[in-house]
Amino acid sequence: MKVIFAVLAVITAPFVNAHYTFPDFIVGSTVSADWQYIRETANHYSNGPATSVTDPEFRCYELDLQNTAGQTSTASVSAGSTVGFKAVSRDVNGAIYHPGYLDVMMSKASPAANSPEAGTGNTWFKVYEQKPTFANGQLTFPSTSQQQFTFTIPKSLPSGQYLVRVEQIALHVASTFGGAQFYIGCAQVNVVNGGSGSPGPLVSIPGVYTGYEPGILINIYNLPSNFTGYQAPGPAVWQG
Image (tube, rainbow, N blue to C red; front, side):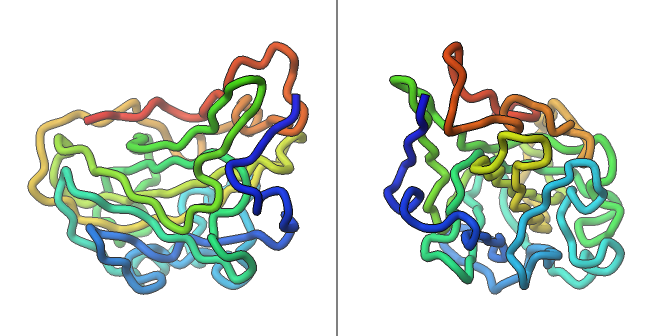
């Protein structure tokens, strides 16, 4: 089977130049300054992806695992409110360019969102995803060509400090192990007006993936004849 893309730009522009970062956090209708609430990533100049799912850097892809967290501000947000991420690319208008899967995970932060220890345990849960859709033998990628996206923080999420991790898994060269490209960013937030929910299932990052998941190791240009749909990697979305 052949794959089709959500927009013509995905077909016509060169894949190799289409790297991006997620430096801007959105609270309501306000877009932050670059790296104000999001830990500055190691690819802030190159825009290149992470490819190893086992490295400590896979968690938030920080420029400095020890110091970046403390140099980043923490945004105050309400449970049930709208937040999001804006992507930036030096190469392609529209930013989120590669076909792939997009999700957001959160982790209760201990001792605080701006500490390097935050998110290091079995604490992560998924709150949002955009999956490729499959119909008439073809995949379509809704996350492609978006410059920004928003979602709702679950209303029942308990108050406290959290990391909010965006991840777009680009699948254009994912037909061999290690080929998938991960574009990552972690916002630091303090959730207020929360509820009494119990987020889950909980996973660790790294640890959530092996790299052999069918949603990560996949040839999107030559789908098998028995393909029935895209299998999202990681845990199910917690609805709150």
